[in-house]
Image (cartoon, rainbow, N blue to C red; front, side, top):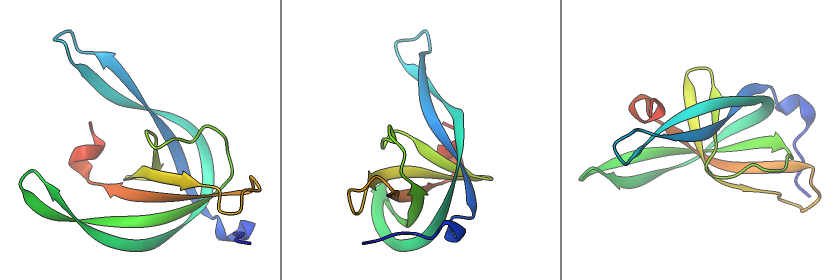
Length: 114
């Protein structure tokens, strides 16, 4: 059984949801709407090499532990101050609806604005 003690969840995150609106030219504009404040723990998981725009970048992956909540999907992201984390996956490690473990990728400042 994996259980994160409440005291370990001392990092404040804001759960952000994407909102796409038409741009008038056949595309859409994405903005992020701040949702509830959640408390969690964060630990560096690994680094991945990822090809982006014709070059290879190193991507920092983290594991974020949160209290279980329904409706968390991979389209959302977590904000911690100026840092943004795209949710890659979220799972309930023991199936008891007590904890969520999210694998997240830190989003660079250029990507965070879009």
